[in-house]
Length: 170
Image (spheres, rainbow, N blue to C red):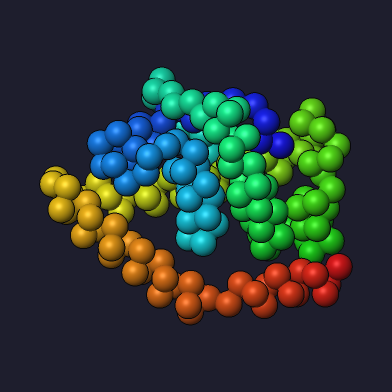
């Protein structure tokens, strides 16, 4: 898991490039990927790959190697908290299915689910920064607003109860 290059394609590649190269919100594509997974999950946005655009943004294996622990943690957390699957399957998805290898269908399904949250989160990020931002100061102010809004939402959401429920239910 997270050992190979990953290519983000379509409009999500365009959005990723915008967030890194134009808006300068993130330094690396891997940062957009990790934050996209979290925001996609928190906003309940699962999006399929866009096939209408040929744009591509690559995250190389060495970036995943440097961020492996964070990527694994985010992946496992999303798999444990995603309530679209049964509680029994959540633990398998979070901890067991990835040991079957990347060619295993369960692992492929899990990564497809995870990456759908990533793409949804990339859209959330793009939407937050595309509107009314033209100067560096605009982006800084918007970043402050987004971080404050995110903190307020997290303070009001009790995901610890969902984690506890997943552990006790298994």
